[in-house]
Image (cartoon, rainbow, N blue to C red; front, side, top):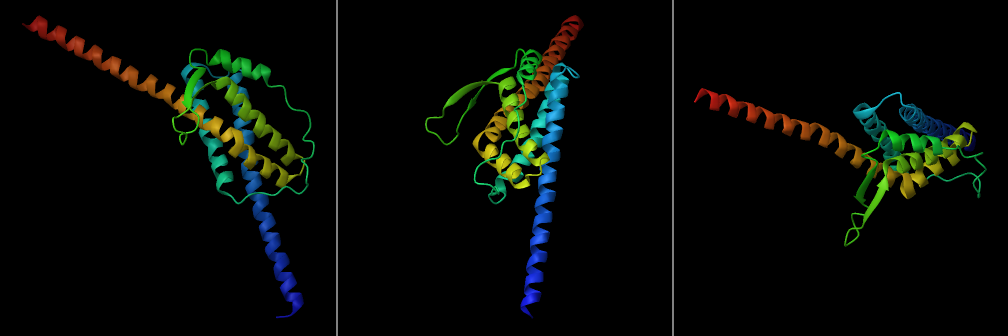
Length: 207
C-alpha cells in the first residue's frame, strides 16, 4: 500500500469520527432543547398539580439519560485553551419563581449529598432552584453548540454534568419520584382503609 493510500484511509477515518461526533452532539443538543422547552412550558403554567410533577419527572429522567451518555464518553477536549464567550446568560429568575409557586408544598426537599461520605451528609435544597440551575448549565452549552463550537459544547455539557447538574438532576429525580410514590401509594392505602371500614359496617349491620 502506498503512502498516499495510507493518508486517504486516515482522512476517511477522521471524517467518520468527526461525523459520529457531530451526530452525538446533535442528539445531546436535541435532548437539551427538549428539556428546556418543556421546563419553560411547565413553569408558564401550561400544566398544573400532579400532571406538572409527572411531566417534570419524565423530563428530568430523559435529560439525565443524556448526562449518562456524556458521563461514560471519553473526555472531550475543547479546541481553544480558554472558553469562548457564549453570550449573555438568560435571566431565569422569573422561571425559578414560577416553579416555586407551582411546586409549593413539595419544593423543599432533603437528600444525601454524597453516599460515599461517612457519616452521610444531608443537604436541603429546593426543586425550583435545582431545576433552574440545571437549565442554566444546559443552556450555556447549547449556545456554544448553536454557534458551531461542537467540541466546546460537548466539553461543557460533560464537565458540568460531572461537576453540578448531574448531581442536582439526580436529587431532583429522587424527590419527584418520591412525590409521585406518596401520591399513588398513600392514596391506595387510604382507599384500602375506607374499604375495610365499609366492610366492618356491613358486618355489623348483618349481625
